[in-house]
Length: 113
Image (cartoon, rainbow, N blue to C red; front, side, top):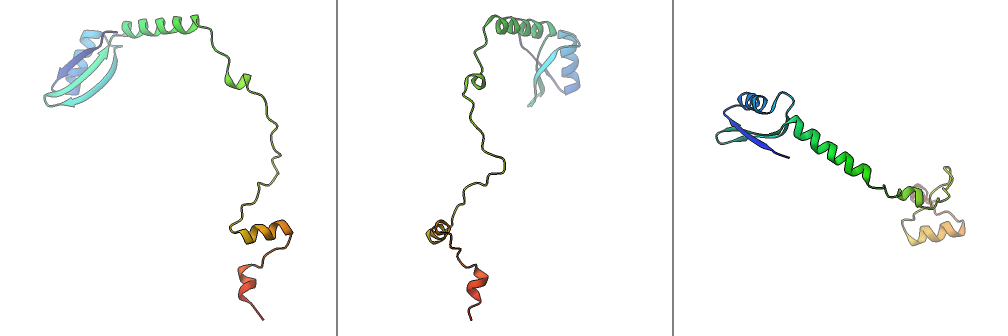
């Protein structure tokens, strides 16, 4: 692909130079300010078409590898309503959970008769 650079004092002038040299359908690849004004890198429409056509030919000539999702074994999904396992903040809370005894809440601990 033949990329051309255009330099001008303003963007408007640089774009006019691009249109004059490469046509109204040129593709702008980059533009940036420089010490002397503006730099625009562009290619003609014919260059873009030739690159896209050759890329399309190359992609259709290769056999597509099988999708990883198609070859992966299917896993049984968990029920939507199944609760996730509880994470305990302390070993004491974990032991109480396993034994079925619930630990008193902070409010219950604060109120001691």
